[in-house]
Image (tube, rainbow, N blue to C red; front, top):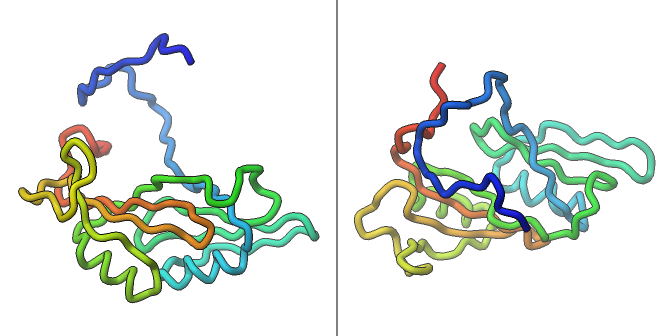
Length: 161
């Protein structure tokens, strides 16, 4: 793998920001059983946006987490990826303990809270810093989700109008 053009600069300034609006709309998740996955995500309280069938070999179901601008698509004939192969999809929440309780009440198996300090450490970030407390869960196929608590965004992490 080439690293040509790769940068480790984490500056919040970028002199060459694109001028065309581009918004992440849908991420496709590979699943083995569309109806089971549809039921799982609806059970989490996600909105069903579409369930389209076009013949015996194509179906796409689109679901959106509460108040998210991006959705997921599951289905048949929409990806060649192996079911359960997508990992570390991040869901940002402002109150991770409440989000964890809600997901558990809805049937998800959610990990205990953890923070990173040279690796995962049990419990929330001791200083409760934004971006530093996590929990995980998976869908029935093993596609992995990471909850991340963000209470205030770092400079440069929001687009200006």
